Image 1 (cartoon, helix red, strand yellow):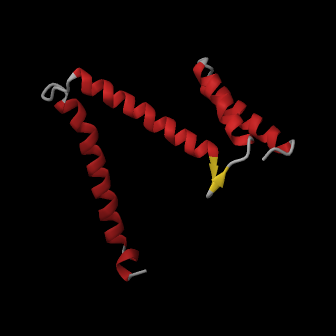
Image 2: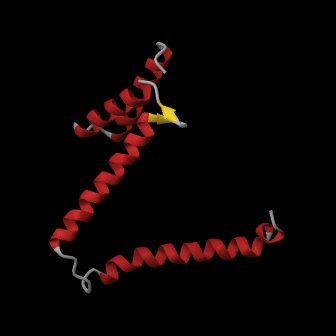
Length: 111
């Protein structure tokens, strides 16, 4: 690692630049909401794209471990979480139930 990577001034400047950029992005939404018109069809596509992206992320995380497939415990735990979330259970109940199902299945030898 270079000496510049350990320089506190560069680290602080980087953090401030990222904070300013994040703030600018968050501020742009309310400021530009009335100036930019996004067609309804594009809005529907963007909403669908967000759902597809999150679903693919959940599927990839639930079904794989390293470079191979995960055992049945993790996908079944995620399935329990999905059903509970669909039924509008409280978030804490969803997380704890999924963790409990996964742990019990692993304890039973299904990893």
